[in-house]
Image (tube, rainbow, N blue to C red; front, side):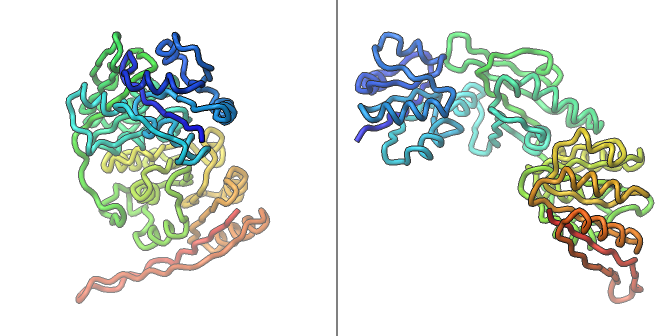
Length: 402
């Protein structure tokens, strides 16, 4: 039975053991960068990209002998190893790992990495870079040509500036390691602004460091913990029930329409840090409160959208979940526009205080052919033993499933 020899490469040259493996294989898969290492071997050469075509050619080549595949560092760490094992199974694959790019970078930076957060931005469009990076005291980033260190630094800089988070902005330090193990290896460090103003080689690792973040509870913020104005905040009990009804996914996109103080967004952001939360708020007072809460809790997976629904929806990624907490007099138009963008299998939740809001929401969701349900929550609070009962207006929670 023919085998796949998956060989990790670290440095500018092959080892003797790697050379012996390659001599036994009639076919070699390699990237353009690694091709000079095997230029003197008269073997069938297969380009590693595009991956689909490479897999088909490997399957064909295995009919006549072993196939060697050259990959950077440890092929099982954000590498081609997963794809090969999923396609051919684990049995025919022998992995010969080298030092990974993370290990190599940490050695150059002289830092331990057993508590390091690893964030891959490689080969993907990511709308939640601030949220994925800024929640960690130390994060090592796999970058690519599109998500390059200068672009990532610029995105982080813009997010922090938008919230006026000057303390965090000035405390963050960036280190970049380029072309590790090669003759033109380079180490760079600087502030976000300094890194955003430079260019870097495509082969690099990016380290983002900031002071340790305060330890916070994941769920259960109280009204007094959240910056708000004039008592305009979703009450704790209603917020908890709303988040339960939303059934938020671990990742994806959540729209909070009429964010107010951003209390629902804030709890959602802390529960699901990989979830991109677009909080739409038209009033400046509410916007300032949301920005303060983002700063206070480092909840940078919240993206504040300054504008009015439904017009503000146009520039946003399609949502997996929607919460309507405020709508003014435009509820029907908001629901129609929001549901049109809602992903299949998604859910919208609408909180209604007024009977007219409840009636409009139920009729609109039914007309749009969603599966609709509602429940009414009545909250009474009392501090024992002396406190008087405080009775709040009932809230109807309406859900629509697409």
